[in-house]
Image (spheres, rainbow, N blue to C red):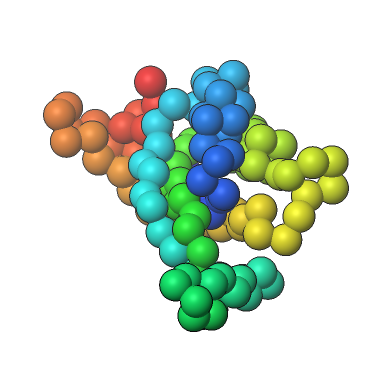
Length: 117
């Protein structure tokens, strides 16, 4: 089992969800987050004063998958979250972590069966 964390642009959420659904991946948690990377923010003028916006709004997707779905999940997120053909700075990152165990609270199922349908 793997725990996949993807940081994406907020406007790409629907496309990423659709791409995951096509590959039978439905379970995820989505959080609003702020962060910076190579974009390093931008300058904005508000009421005549200029200020630097360093932390940009992003979405964090957390997805637990069985090993058989890891590559499909990564491919779906990369394909749907990328801007244009070659992508742009700020499209996001995907982190793949080992997932030691998972327990479905309702039934008490453990491991891959708790993640699966």
